[in-house]
Amino acid sequence: MKKSNQDELVFLPLGGSGEIGMNLNAYGFGPAHDRKWIIVDVGVTFGDLSTPGVDIIVPDPEALKGEKILGILLTHAHEDHIGALGWLWPRIQAPLYATPFTAYLIRDKLREQNLLQEAKLHEVPLGGTVNLGPFECEFVTMTHSIAEPNGIAIKTPLGTVMHTGDWKIDDTPVVGSRTDAKALTRLGDEGVLAMVGDSTNVFVDGVAGSEGDVAGALVDLIKPLRGRVAVGCFASNVARVHSVALAAKAAGRRVVLAGRSMHRITAAAKHVGLLGDLPPFLTDEEARVWAPDEVLYLCTGSQGEARAALSRVADGTHPVVKLGSGDHCIFSSRVIPGNELAIGDLQDRLADRGVRLYTEKDHPAIHVSGHPCRDELKQMYDWVRPRIAVPTHGMRRHLMEHANLARDMGVPETVTPRNGDLVRLAPGPAQIIDEVPSGRLYVDGGMLVTEAGEAIRERRHASSNGVLVVSFVLDKGGRIVSDIDVRGIGLPGDEGTPLGDALDGLAERVEDVVRGLKGEALQDELVVEQAVARALKKASQQIWDRRPIVETIVLRL
Image 1: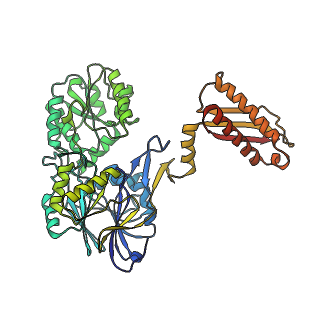
Image 2: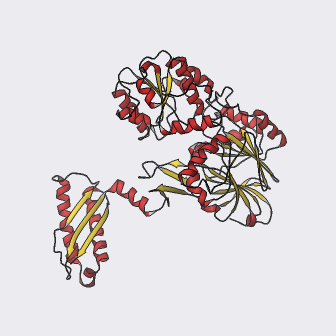
Image 3: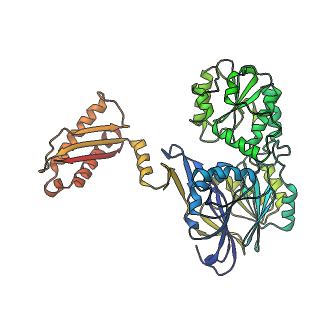
């Protein structure tokens, strides 16, 4: 980082800018050579076809190595905001601060990595304040699709930053309090230097909608149904869990939880006094003996996750939830981009069992977003009135459009950083002053590896190009004294088909290559292996238009 002798207030996103998920945002104060930092959120994103074998991806905090980190503040308990704590806390060791519901779930993360005794976790009351060196941090109550979402007003000697976290405006939130408009207006009156804010729904006109309206729509949908009823939703959406449970009660049904996350989240909610107005959930044993018309199954897996409850229901392998002809499954959630194929496959499997499906496409009122649409963003700018807008939590197009909206609202300055851009917020005009290392770490085989790691690279290569395994025996003189075994993995064809003929041809190619080597080359197994690999990759390009990984095994008598 570039050096300066004057105090500066800087913002550094290391995750969540130019992407939706994997949030990690740092704020620094002081001269560059003696800067003090706080971190807001430490989240994950999830693997896809481009990361074979990797389910969890976390931001790389290398840029903060050796820096003075005074604290880590968590806005809310979604995985893209707290999910990386168990993996990254050892690298960014600092006290943790969160409101009670979020703190409950953070303890689970720390416990899984045996960090519960080492990491210091402080519970902050709703609306509470934390003082960390030059940072006075006020937790501001928001509404979102999880319990206890918070914005954080970060007050420093050079100005106040309003970090919104994930939010929406919901006048009837079902669970928790409404967005604290009075606190936001007060901050605006006091003067806000910058607002760092959610950009997810910036292209959507109007407002996201209220959870209270969803509750009524679920009652209307569920009450007349007969047979078994299952509802799939995000377990973290405690308000939706509450709405479904009330709809079940109105229909004369009792709720059965299906999925580990449902049990974990509802336990956290009850720990902080939520869901106390609901009838007790049925146990698995009770669910087996209750009549189908008297039970509602609340399930994880609405995004098509292979190991979640709904997927096992669709396969007929769930030990408790059994759906078939005449039964119903309601998807009270949206399709997250990238999950279309998995969700479609899940719904096809359920339909094949005779289950009738209900989604937001045919029943729009059964789901609302947890992120602000354009009218809500405008209202937030009216409340806070920042001098600088710094859009985050969105793809590049979201950030740029959010900046356009902020300018339309009269915000004098906008900055749209990428991960790794160091933004000076004060003194002087807001601008990107440096670029620091940023990237991703993959959780692979229970350990953190870099995204450029050899194992991931080879796995990607093998997934698209296949593998050839070649083995043979050489005598001391370098002659082949065994059959040449060539096996193809992930290459077109089967044994006894053109693949078999191709492999035979490759064995002949190996023999020609070895015979062409002379002198010392024949005595060096590495030279032999490299020569064989080059020849087989070239031949494979001609046969299959592929360059597979070639694993050559040379045994020496």
